[in-house]
Length: 170
Image (cartoon, rainbow, N blue to C red; front, side, top):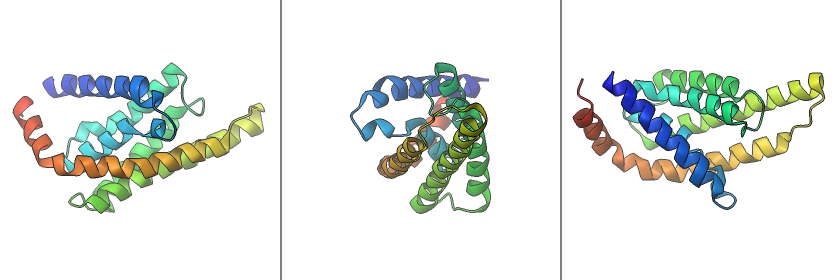
């Protein structure tokens, strides 16, 4: 139960940091997918199994706050969480930076593809005007900016794992 509340608290801190600080940075730094990168890092490399739900919760918060690129971000982020789970368990190694980077980029590409499909659906059936080029550009810059963030987080894996074990005993 303590792990659950600690995970929720960490997610809330990250969402506040993402929405209030990262989004106010100048272009292209405002496109850093901080919660996405941290959740993939914690899930794949540090083996915190609950961190994959942060991706789904990020989509839900984007829907709740109305700041997403499309009206139903939760669907795109949920499908991306499934792809991240499958890729980290069956496709990429969790012991290398390249596996971590590939999983993150695969997740962001999945979000972009699903967002494009949903945007096309909304344009066809509801005659809404959605910026599909903007969606792709944001995800492309997000993928490029996530790699340096992962490079900074990668050496912190063992201290992070020890800190989690110290603060949250099993």
